[in-house]
Length: 324
Image 1 (cartoon, helix red, strand yellow):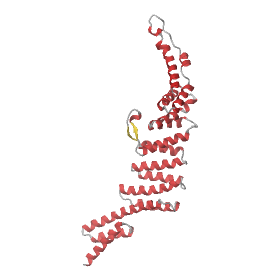
Image 2: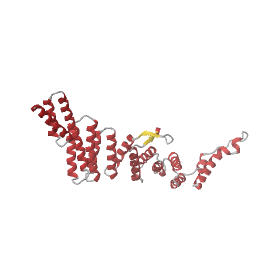
Image 3: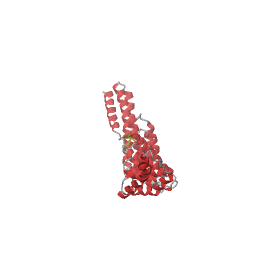
């Protein structure tokens, strides 16, 4: 570490002294010495040396120094073959510093800039990990500055990264996890239909994969959440039943079938309760014939629900009162 810094500072000082520290620079009686570009170039570190400094900084886990050396290479030697790998190394350094938005930017630049990236899979894996951090509530820094606090929501950034991963490696296992993460964020924003479409894409591409079963389960959970958050749409119940049937055919011994069935059961409870409440409304208004119609619908459509038990009791009471 000391050797690298010493060599670097020594060369920088040599350049500075040529123009700033010479006695001639402070004397008005002596002619000004002009420093030629070739003199500076011959004294300054080469691209190979800056790259070597960066590698040494990485070995020492001196991440900020690694970033500084890498940016020097990119700025002064953009056409050098060394510059092809630099964005990845900068991205990795930012990643180790938990500067995730800056890491993601550098890694995207690396993937875009390199025709055949040497660290392709490592870059994608890091980007996916960054998306996972943002998905689970991790914040990004104000204005993308490492000096400002991390207080900005970043789920939108996670969606973009997931799409990059899904597009870049559409049939890789990491794409499955990206599809699941993307669907979760879409549900977070109440984008229920796009979330279902995302999971259906997962199932279509990876029908034999274990996580396809998770896709089926999450679809039914989304239908349930949609019923809880929005107006009860009868089509949702039909869609949930169809999804469950497909789940049973694709994974007949899957333990998660019980959870998908339970989600469908909760949906039926919601629809049954809605009919029950309508029947109770008419009952309060002394319109018993109308109330019985709705109580009977509960029994006919959702006989295994708790609402059906309540409807059965109310029908019996109304019939007893009618006879008495």
